[in-house]
Every structure is written in structure tokens, then in C-alpha cells.
Amino acid sequence: MTLALVTGASSGIGLELARLCEAEGFDLVIVANEPAIHSTGLAAQTVEADLATSEGCATVLAALAGRDVDLLFLNAGTGLVGSVLEQDLPGIERIINTNVLGTVRLLHPLARRMVARNAGRILVTGSIVGYMPGSWQAIYSASKAFLNSLCGAMADEMKDTDVTITCLMPGATETKFFERAGMQDTPVAQMKKDDPAKVARTGFDAMLAGKVQVTPGLLNKAQGAAAEVLPAGLVAGLSAKMFKPKE
Image 1 (cartoon, helix red, strand yellow):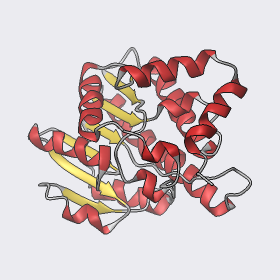
Image 2 (spheres, helix red, strand yellow):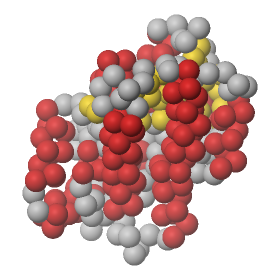
Image 3 (cartoon, helix red, strand yellow):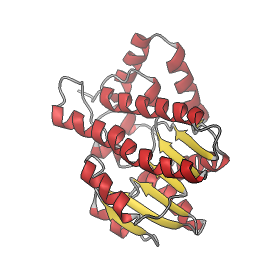
Image 4 (cartoon, one colour):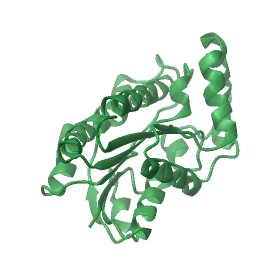
């Protein structure tokens, strides 16, 4: 039976990805750093683990008990509102440890095993903000830039295999992210956001099709494209208008 592993699966895009896997009849392992992972209602093996730590990542790998993962969904991520110098260093380190190291610590060993048997599909949740100097969300944006770039490079490195990696690059999506990042008073938190179920479906289908990257929605595509060609200072200023808390 096909085995799917989904991180950040207690809510939002991750939960919707897990629901898609369940609907397909996949054997399912779901992961999150909170007790809510045990009450999703899914027929899945649940793992409560903090992917900001090497121990948490090791817990996930141990839970697989040597089984090969066929579909790997690396969705876990966290953010923190504020200017870089206003944020405390432990908070900054947690974003990097979760979004970057937590992803790589699972991606590296599991992708290696996929390549060794020449089979597997990977979906990593990046973001359109990875294209932007994300003023007032700089560490989060930088972490997503890492993931966007990593996926594109690995896709090329694995192009002669039957293993694919897809980067899902959504815009603002209706999830608990904004509350958890302390962003309730920001303009982006109060704007209309994308449906996580639709975002998940877009990523899921793109992964199965072996696409290198996908951005749901025409507006998000336009924002991502504009961020690549506009001057960095202008893009940073536009980011501040979205992410800076209202005074």
C-alpha cells in the first residue's frame, strides 16, 4: 500500500493534504507539534513531534519503523511578526529550525531512500513570499526563499530518476498561521485569503504530475512574478504594508 507522510497536519493546508491522502486510500502518517494531531478524525498513525529539534525529527523517522515513504508532504512551518531587531533571537531560531532544518532533516534521508529505489513523490510547502524581501516578516520570508530554491535545485539534480520534488508556493491562506505568528493586527491577516482545501488540492495534483513548482491563484502568480522583477526596496515597502501591525 502507498505510504504518505504529512507534516504540519493538525490544521490548515497540512490537514487538507492528509484528507486527500485518506480519500485516496493511502496508508497515512501525520505529524504536528501539538496534541491536536491526535484528534483530526483521520484514519492515520499520529506522531506528536517538534520538528524544530533534531530529536523531534528523529521521532518521526523512528515512527516509520523502516517503511518506505512513497509520498512525502513537508508542510510544517512557523512565523513571527515584527522587525528582525525587535524579535527575540530564540523566536528567530525557532523559525529557522522548523522551516529550514526541520524540513531538511526529514527530506534528506527520506529522499535518499526514494532515489535508492527510484520511486517517490515529494511536496514541500514554500511560499510566494520566498520571492520577496519580506519586511516585518523577514525571517519567515527568508526561510521560504531557502525552500523555494532548494526544491528547484533538487528537482534538477533528480531529473534522471523517477523521484520528483514539487514546491507549493501559496499566497495568504486561511489557516491558524496568522494567529500563531501574532499577526492578528496586520493587514494581511484581515484580508480575504485562499481556501486551504483548494491550495492543498493544487499542490497535491501538481506533485502527482511531477511539476517542479506551483502557485495557486492568478493573483498569487502575479504577485510572485512582480516580486522577481520590481526593485527590492519597492517590494520590501509593499511587504511592510501587508505585514506591519496596525498602530
